[in-house]
Length: 114
Length: 118
Image (cartoon, rainbow over all chains, first blue to last red; front, side, top):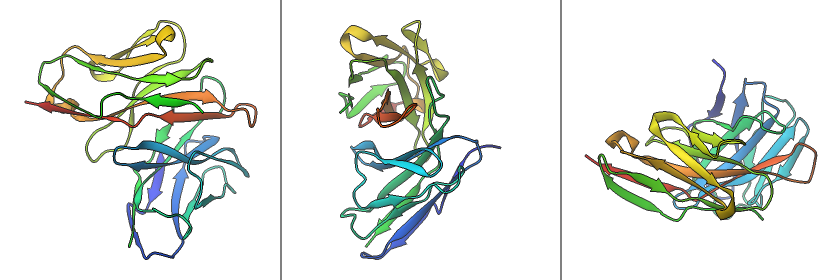
């Protein structure tokens, strides 16, 4: 079955460490996205990529970095510069272009930094 | 920047009551509009979408939404809610960004929690 796989489901890190969240899709979608979900804040866009080897900052990119070396993979690194990294992180994908189907979401990774 | 406003943070209803969740967006151009639902412990799922045509769109599980362009609104409705509708609902707007051809951004509202009391 096609879908988006995020791993791990739960991740714990010490403050000051960088951590990378995995996102893989086998939907052959061009576009991939990272959102952060906080209680009462909804979903906020961190980074998105419309095509391989290209990505754009979203609304809250500070303290995060991404890469898009392969179409099916879009890992997110939460750096030590991110002031409030504890959150639920959602990866999504879609076909690019006008009238594209809406985003497909992964099951998310809950990151806790202490 | 585009924004999406969901006016109700938490709505509590009894079963069989009617539901209307408000959603307003700020963007003057052509938009695609969505409602997503997140049931407890589950991932986000698409409830319904509007791209063009009939402004009244039907979604899954008896939900519908009406696009009113003059009011920049896309309110979600259901005539009679069930306990199983307890979830968080997110309105989203897909708008083009001009950093590259075919680039789009999806902006979400902050969500509305719906609690249905049996």
